[in-house]
Amino acid sequence: MMQIFLVILFTIFSVTAFWFFLRGKYKLSPLWLMLSVWFIAIAISQLNLSTLELDWPGKYWYLLGISLVSFVLGFIVFDNWSPLRVIRKKSQSLIPRSFSSSETDNSKLRYVIYFLFGTSLLALYMFYQRAGNFPLLSPDPDAFRFAADEKVPGLINYGAQLARIFIPLSFFYMFWQGFNWRKHADLIAISVVGIVFITLFASRTQIFFVDLWIMGLYLLMRKPNWKQALKFYPIFLLVSVFVLAAVPLIRQTKSYGPDYLGSITGIDSSNYNKLQKALVPIYVGVAFNQQALLHAWQYYQVNPVQHGKVSLDPFTNILGLDQFRSNYNLGEIFYSWWNTGTYLFPFVQDFGEAAFYFIPFLIAGLLTILWQYWRSNPNFLSINLYAYAYFFMVMTVYLSFTVRAEMYLDLALLVLVYLFIIHDSKRHSSHI
Image (cartoon, rainbow, N blue to C red; front, side, top):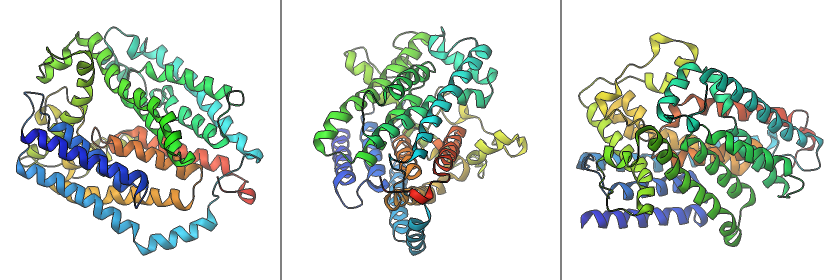
């Protein structure tokens, strides 16, 4: 009975926070979206469908509460921090706000999309030459993905999945100009082909990433009313649910056989209908990552922390600084088939229980700065960075993107594209 009460209570909290995100004070801010996402994640986790799930002890509830309070305080502090207000005012006169459809430099974005598409084609060929197949087409997608990571260098792997970048940029271009089938036929074709490309890698995160980025762009650029939103978002929400359910089912069925997920997670799905079975991967993706965070907190109560090495892994690995790499065994923390644990997980590895107190505050600060940047300077860079941040926030309940090198490559690429687009165009910049 208490479980049902908690599910209903946190679902109401989530819906209320999302309403404020759309219509209340601090509209479209990270404050409300983060709270909405975490409240619904807590609600889902209270269903306790698996026999492997530990009951949340009172201390863990307390730490989750502290992390959310810390995030709220971080937002309030950074939103009202006077030095940032001065920087915002000065930046309005220093940074080009956008580029209009009449400017010749606008065609640069189209050229960038073509370039990224061509680079992706070349990288896909190189990936296939080295790996011999693609994960989705292989007999054992899970095993193939690990083997491909060993065979294919990181930049080729990243380049082969550049559809994650050129598809959202294509939609940015179309939203900015006003969608037209004839005028944007090339970008539509590139996006469709890109969807095929990225699906070959059997990664729900990658497809969900593109989906959320585009939904964020539409919200920030078009500022839709309810009628427009109801025409646009249901399709993308259906894609999100389909991807989160179908991709792991296909991958795991090919690799391990049917009903693998239910059996390994201790979820009795024998009486589930097809829809309920399809939703099991979504439940596991949310509830078991809360479990991973719980296990990590308990593990590092009695084991030494990594002192920042996990957070720095994306950089030390790229630079080959082996002496600074983290050293831990995930199998000692949780079951070997778990691989994520919310955005807090690597920080708990690095700093233990203290991470619940100060990491959300700092993350809130960074997200608040992006929100302010978008509000004061709605240009190519600010819009795309903040739309990217929407994906980051939604995925905080699933994984930590801060320890994935592709996030830093994505952000660097967006900055380079922005600098290329605005080069020599300051004299005729304008509002969107």
